[in-house]
Image (tube, rainbow, N blue to C red; front, side):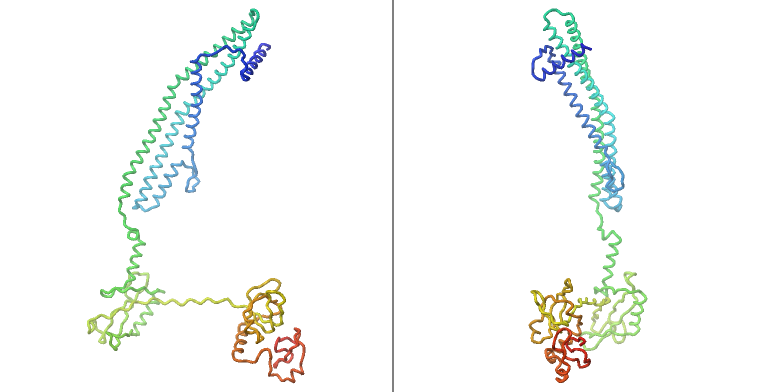
Amino acid sequence: MSSAFKRGIERLGQRTGELLGIDTGRQIEVSEEFKDLLFETDHRHSATENVHAALLLYSNQLLKKKDASDHTKLKLYLLENLGSSMVRLGVGLPKDSPYGRAMRELGQAEERMSEQQVEFVNAAKEGWVPSLQRSLDDFKEYVALQKKLETRRGEYDSRLVKFQRARKDNMAVEDDLRTAQIRYEDAYDDLAKRMLEMQDNETECLREAFNFYQAQLAYHQNCVKDLNSLSAVFDECLKAKRAPAAERHPLGRALDSRRAALTIKTGDTPTSARFPISFGKTASTTSLSRMASQSTPLKHLRNGSQQPSEISIEVGASTPDADAGPVPQVLRANSDNDNDTALPDKRQVPTVSARRHVPAPPTPARGQRRVLRKAIYKFHADELGELALEKGDIVVVTETIQNKWLKGKLVYSAVSEKNEAQTGVEGLFPEEYTEPCSESDLKSLQAADKSGAPQRSASITSAPATAATKTAKTCACGCSDFVPNKFKEDRCSKCFHDH
């Protein structure tokens, strides 16, 4: 126990001296060849770790699955996901579509390359990756032997220094030195032997690297083969002549037939016309038949003369589109003897194109009804922005303010002197000083002004003066110009309050 403790103390002192740069008297040195081999092995160790980590990263990245782009919650390889998306696009397009065919072929090639990629990566993980892992395990043993050599060399140095410092021959010190030397040489030989064996293991590593190369080469060759097979497909698709969609698609043909049906031909003269809006076959046929049975002629001037000619209408003729209902066809004008011979001047009467149903005119939009208020009390404008009112003034409300205040514009003034000057003035006024008013009342007052009615400031002058003097009262609203109503004696003709 004491000897082990002493060796530990000696090793600690030696290591401390090395760190502090103090010469402890180390005299054991290795050869340059051993140092070169040691340096080479250390480089081989660190580089092998890097290659192993890079190969694992590469293989794991290629084998990583992601969520499918079609939101099917499937896990697919990246190349497989790309190929399946292309195939799905091509299958959804028409069979005669060159683009659809190219997408199907390219997508299938991408899926095959994805399968070959998985096989290649699995081969690499089963071949070269285990070989590199075995090499790393060997390096672990090499690192252990290297630490063992450093430890025994330190012991050997300390024993050698102790032996050299001894003043006289000491058999115990000499035996310890000899034992430390043997232990150091054994560790040295084991480490050198292991480094040489690791160099011989290059053959196995080389073979596994060659297998990886062959697997990768086969993978890329298969990919090139699959891609080269698409060259002819793309050439055919690019050179394919395809009719326009309007010609090959049923909807395009239907549109062409509808456009052709919009032209009515009479003889050699094409006349553009529109089909009338069909509201049912039975109703349309009945109305046109009634018109034909009544024999109501369409008269116009014939050949520039004053003699009118008649144009008959034939109903129930066949139409280009069966769903459009019967379409009236306009025939040429008949002469007075109702025969099919040509007109005397050898010229055909111009045809009359069918008129489509005239839609009803749009309903005019109603404007927003104005809100009118009539002043029942006199209001004095004490602050800026308020609107002064006289009894009988009519205001159109433009905005509702809080606390029962309104904002409006004066449209009618009961006082004739300010009727023209104050009309159109805008301001605030209290809602309690006014009452609702209708448009008819406003129009009647304006009409009375235009007709020259008596001035409103004089009120109703037709009442006898004696009656006004006899019934002089004070209005409840505070005014002193009470004028009795001719029809109701207890009401004022100005503010219509009960007095």
